[in-house]
Image (tube, rainbow over all chains, first blue to last red; front, side, top):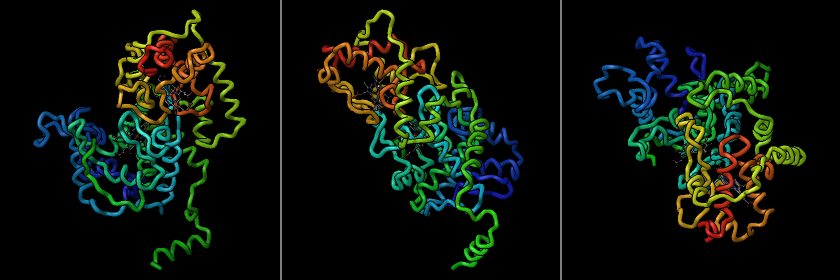
Length: 200
Length: 205
């Protein structure tokens, strides 16, 4: 399991979702807007309007693809690459973003994921600088969230924590989202990839 | 040793760029500034201006967990000076309303209605009453806060001030600055003070 990593054709560090967008654009003839139109189930417009597997367009084909491809990596060791300068830059930027406190609540990722054994209400919070916590947090997405009855991806998890931080909306497959995921992947290095999983 | 490793080492030894294990810090700073600009979009009440840090946020991000003592003292002094006490002088409101505010976790998210008052999300981080078992642990338990400390004017002013601007007492606290950042009104804060200090409040049972 080596994502996110640098791809020469895109000249960019990419996670699974951003890579899929590139493939859909360069190989399948979608525009970038079409490929990114329905990043998560239940939001946005359907990606493929007449998708035969998605009923009325509630489901995200992107998320379904992510879940299937991730399942092919189940059991592999989490081994993100840091050999390319852009990979190292993404990691360091991700680390800085992790500690970046802003907004009306002064929140940063560190506020909720910086100490061991804490919770919000009854939800346990992983400490991301702790390898075991990070391995579980990174290695179990995408996952099926029982509370929502929905399959969710790592891009969604970033989007959702950012929303709860009272930040503006995180753009799907943006550089900040990929930098944060790169940082988490590195913290989870050596763990076993165990997605798709079942989530609260 | 694999051939590729040998090659990398060889390139390193002769000083080819790219062998350094870390990119320069200023380069990473620039990348972050770019990302802050390009990766977020205003949605509802959550405008991109929110990503601009004030001085305290910038210092707390930079020195996460290891703020120098003089910087910490300076933050506390400046943040205390921001606290506005109600002109009526009355700091204790109605604990029943306080309990509702403490329970509510909404407010200021782009999915929240800006016309509705925000909650305090106190239970997200604190234990308060004994009945509510779904409480977080980022902050200390506040159960029996008033019973243990009394409700003298000093304690009232501390409780009000702490909720208004937590960093006036503890620099870089993980607790939001509810009054200073316009999340809660002065009146809402007095209801929360009542929740903490009123002898009839479930916090003190």
